[in-house]
Structure formats: structure tokens, C-alpha cells
Length: 184
Image 1 (tube, rainbow, N blue to C red):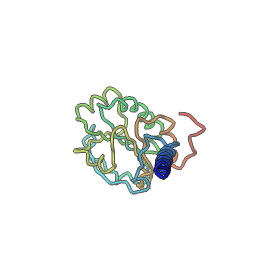
Image 2: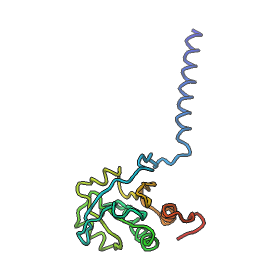
Image 3: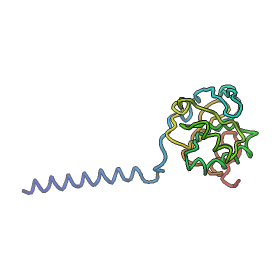
């Protein structure tokens, strides 16, 4: 009988220890953060049509200047919240960084209406069948990708980006001082 209760006790201690280990592994991590496997890898090239002009825009032709790519959709509530921040970023940093918007899983008519309401000061591109979104691993919108002047993906931001985070990422791309002490 004692051997059986001893086995139950050891099993309970092992189970509690395993549960504690799993819980401790999660503490201190952002639960929304998903490992990003493309960081540090060359950005996949693409050529997409600009909504306003119909002209092709090629990522390859932008090499030599950092690029910020924002995937968005008109049906996305957080995109509506984020769009003024991206527009602000373009006005503030458009000389240093090329901004591109890529419409995700949306119709051109709806995207155009969204842009008429909220404004558009940088190229907005159409991604037929979401091929570029798939290449970049877009899981949902909004997502913003940061590519350095050599064409290497330096990171991404999932969800609506705020001015401070955008400033910090752009300054890191362009080799400028950290934005930790400044506010836009």
C-alpha cells in the first residue's frame, strides 16, 4: 500500500513540476508576439500595380533606400485606427524611407473609398490573390514590415502601430538615433 501511495505522490510532484515549468516559460513574453522567421532574410521581390496610377511598383527598384510596407484592408477596424499614424510617418520620414501600402484581401472599390476618406500620400498597391502577402507570411492586418536599404527584412509589427514604435523602427532602419528619448 505504501509503495502505491509513494508512486501517486511522485506522479503528482512530477505533474505539478511540469506544469510550473510550462507556466514559467511563458512569463515575461508578449503573448501576441509570433516568432518571425523572415527577420534578417532578403525581402521577396515583387512588382505590383499602384491603385492611383496603374503603374507597376517594383521592390527591386527601391533598393538603396529603406522601405516600410503596410498591409491593410478597408474592412479592418484596427487599420482605420492605424492609417493616420502611417500617413504621419510618411510625412515625417518620407524623405528617408519609402512607404508602400498593400491592400490585403479587399476589393479595389472598397480600398479606394477607404483612402478617399482617410487620405493617401504614398503608393497603395494591389496584391491579386494575396501572393505577396503569402510570401511575407502575413497572418492578418494590419502588419507592417521594415526592410533596410540592402533589401533585408529587419522586422515586422503586428497590429496597429503607434507613432513611437514607428519612429523607433524607422530610425533603426536609417541608422539614426534611438527614439526612446523623443516623441513625435
